[in-house]
Image (cartoon, rainbow, N blue to C red; front, side, top):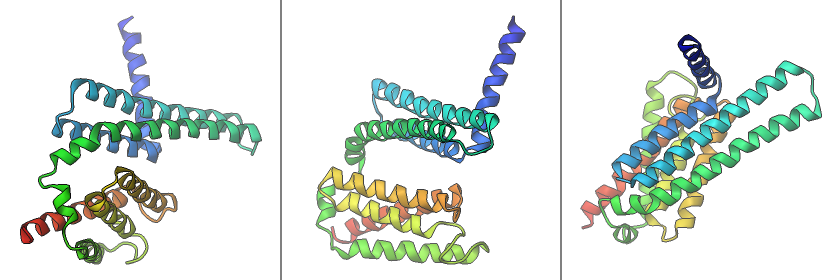
Length: 235
């Protein structure tokens, strides 16, 4: 009895590992989940908020695994194009999209106000800084990306290579909007646009997930540093 239970766990874990190894979106979900949990601990969210966050994370992972299972089953049944096979795959992918949108909404509701309060300086003060801070931040990010690409012999300055320059600039602009905007909706749309840029770089095969992730981190961190330094200079 115990042996059968252990085998069942091994099969289940094997399924999870298969999804992680073969599905890029699964690896993206895992990375985002880790970041979300760390943010929850750092921002000291409540027990109920953490419970909702964890359930949402597992809901997204569950949807992605079901999507992978449906794709594998359809490919096993037929290798030829069939309208019903396409419909099955599209519906499964739509389920993942719905779960991901729900996760974005949950993350926004849990984290936005806490991130604003956690900030070491006032957003109202940052809005009063010179407009050229945004331009300066983008320039610093651009130069940093060029320097990093120069040291990594892969791809070109405009296509491929480590890190993703398009993603770095997109997330730098998003961070600037987050600091300067008075409207949460504007910040949300800026975040969505930055994520779409990152996704497009991976979908077209120009960059790997790690190259895109590093670009996003560079864009956000350097922009935060620029705005933080500006508050010290203009205080």
